Length: 53
Image (cartoon, rainbow, N blue to C red; front, side, top):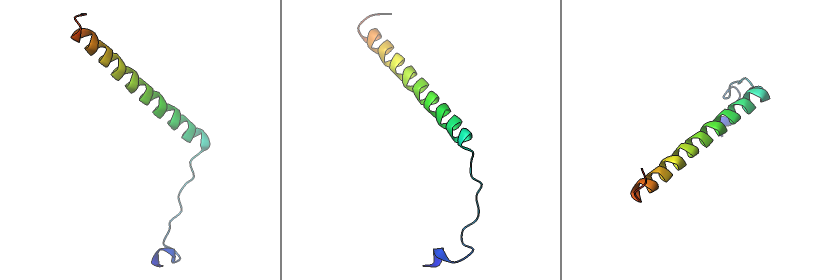
């Protein structure tokens, strides 16, 4: 297999665990904010449909 020849892969820097954890927490926070906004908009839309301002 050609991909296993010597020199095909290059070295990559290993990211620190703290950096990975921080990034995952920020992604989770952004996802929760997005879900919260969508839910609020859906509730507002339903209330408007049934005549509430």
